[in-house]
Amino acid sequence: MDGNGRWATRRGLPRVAGHRAGAEAIRRVVQAGPALDIGTLTLYAFSADNWRRPRGEVAALMRLFRRFLDDETPNLAASGIRISAIGRRDRLPASLAAAIDAAEGRTASGERLHLRVAIDYSAREAIVRAAACCSPGAAPTQADFGRLLAGEGAGEVDLLIRTGGEQRLSDFLLWESAYAELCFIATPWPEFAAADLEAAVAEFRRRERRFGGVTRADTRPSPRRSQRPTHARPTAES
Ligand code: IPE
Ligand code: MG
Image (cartoon, rainbow, N blue to C red; front, side):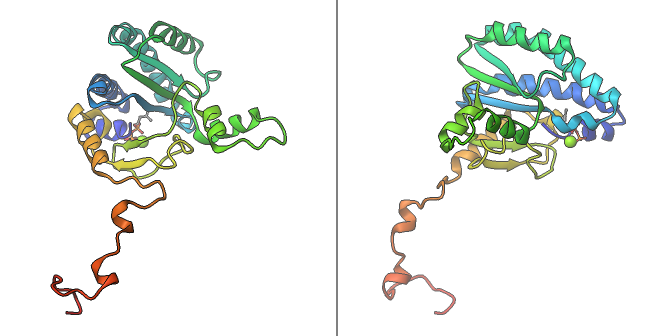
């Protein structure tokens, strides 16, 4: 979810107004998820590196997360949406950490969508922590390690969308995104609508995922290579 600050600044508003508008975008997108057949939606709300931002902005974000959980948890529970957080909790304000625990408990039985919010999250740190859980000398398989890392029931990322025009991963779900389809869009997060999510999912469905393999079409010899074409379409040499 990128572009909140720039969205606000362009309007002559304080950056925190962009974050507030961003929270509205979350509500729209989450409600649109199940109909698009999305089983797990992970939102990158606050990276471990975002602590570098001005104290006032960080404090405003923490308050917003807390308010979002207080306001939305009943709706999430009623809509069958399970919410959980990934990332560190020990550096969060105690009241936010408690609100996360409560929201997780209250929505635990939701099965229509698993909404994961990454707060104080760093993919590299998560990888290092998972590695530390392996016993010394152990050689886990990729599948074992992936399970260790994912916890909370999520695995491979199929589609990764970054709004706001930047084209980088910024330490988000690095292991899990090994074969993710990447979608970078210029729209700032506060303007991201259900239709944008729908368009990204449609684009995802058009993509051919080969996971390092080849498709059947790739293995069929092309006429130009296997035989001299008799009625071939004109080529550069003909
Ligand atoms: C993303 O928007 C939201 C958070 C990191 C909380 P930004 O705050 O990064 O917005 P820009 O990139 O400055 O526009
Ligand atoms: Mg940004």
